[in-house]
Length: 400
Image: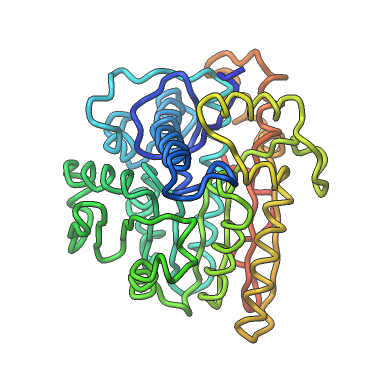
């Protein structure tokens, strides 16, 4: 069953582990047990388990790209000249391992759905936008945005936060890769190689468990607020991060960010261990969800957040609660809206011709297994805005 799991999601910066699958998310600093406080031996081991999954998501994306599910990351590029390929760890054996068809399809659905929401956010309205990517790890999204002239013109700044071990590795890889380094205006490396600053892109090391605590993250908060403007529409992007963060930490983090920005949206991708047919409830893990938890626990990963939020609706409601509290703190009455979907719904709503093409690419014959897998991953979003929402709730299916 391990081959069915999309998700020891995006944990950044570890060595390649070809036996595990994912896509994107370094749980930037997510604790994996309520009893493992930052700095204890058990917490350090848990953090390392999270970091070690970083390359899983990256390799999964490259596998889906090579198989033909995802479009080229830049005009005329191949898988080996893609932005993502430049972010592989040094010494990664080539050719890269191929993921099974159901993993490639799940990865592609995830990537395209998140892409669609991010692009809609950037294109909405006339103001420039800001994006804060939590637990970004080896994600190359900023460079993909930069390669699109229409999108990059709408981006004021893109900030990534993650473990210092992972930001250091990413900064080193960017510095080595001419196509990445030369695209960054005024690039400079700071904080002993763990931070990168440029005109519209910043990478910062930090522990998401501590970001909301000024006694632990005063310097990081100061840096963030010197870069990001509170009046610009701001998207909080969290791919496979909230499922790793204990409930109290994720609530504090979202509330902290919600109080800072007048116009804020949030977008997350996470595993939903109850399955998603029972949206609106908070049931116990399904049989498949229990297997997922067991497989990840064997790798030292205990998903406290996933146990709290078991459906896409639960994640959306978490955003909604934080945004409502933030609106009250700011003393305004901004509109709050939220929505969610699961990857099975995205697959079902996909253009029939494109879905058929995907099914033929590698001869998909595990349809039932695919649908079970997709049911256990969800995309959730919320927005607080004066007037029209920057993230529209149309189901989020990829456009073909």
